[in-house]
Image (cartoon, rainbow, N blue to C red; front, side, top):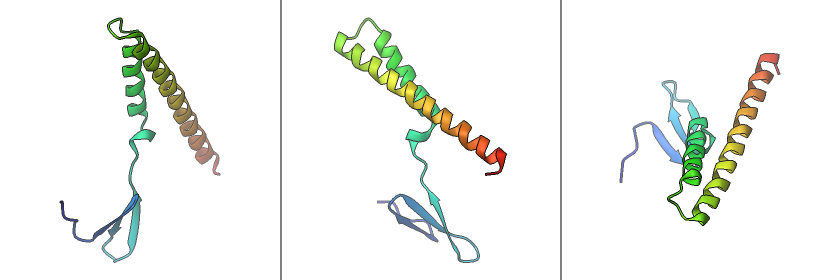
Length: 92
């Protein structure tokens, strides 16, 4: 088991760090599901498996469904990013 770094405590979903003044600063863990690169990678892998003629038909169908879901998720992530950036640029 790994030890904790001095000045840190672990809680579910967050890490808390002590700054030099002693105040607590919470930093949320980054989820891999929200990363654009990871979602794009899953979509490419699923599309590759769906297009591969060496796989069984049921694998190709499931891979096609997974590729479509990854593409939809990527679109949602890009939409949310653009919406957030435009709201910050508009000042609200």
